[in-house]
Image (cartoon, rainbow, N blue to C red; front, top):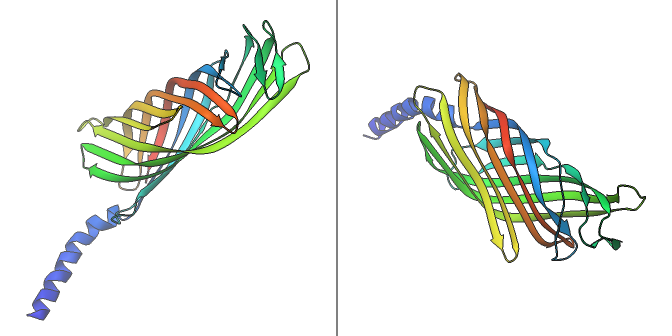
Length: 251
């Protein structure tokens, strides 16, 4: 009897093994070019001054690792460049990092900023048509803001960094027999006077589908809002938004 049970178990394991081998470990990497416009401003106090910023094309890169082990979350890391600059004529007095600029002064503002998402998530639904992920995101924001007189020699800068805990979710829908799909992905936090959100939605097209590699094109829209309340003495009300195109490799 024991031998019969052992034989049945071995046969069952042999039948399941090919399926499990294909899903034992998976990874995907991608890159996006984001043509973003920027609205809003910043200051060292709650009275945020708005500035004019030029549209910029910045890059975003991500990698994710997925596995079938229960309770242990999958992981995704996404790094996005948020650099922008512009020239603004002040309509009122602006004080930044102990420098005071009077109204009608032309200021050049240069923001060098990155956002790095460290996402832990679970796949609560995953089939050929629909996939849903939920988890948490630690968004690390790191950057420098530089302000200088366009026709003068005064220049000041402010460094800032911090980790912002956020909720995370992603939903994907595939259209059978077409290679086309849709997805929406986002992270959000509202805590006190700080509000940070990062949402994107895209149409996708898988033009390579093999056992070893899938390649997918993306075209969509992304919006990121960064309203910070006293992060390293910095207050911001910045809104980054625009269209993007991307390419993803799924191994």
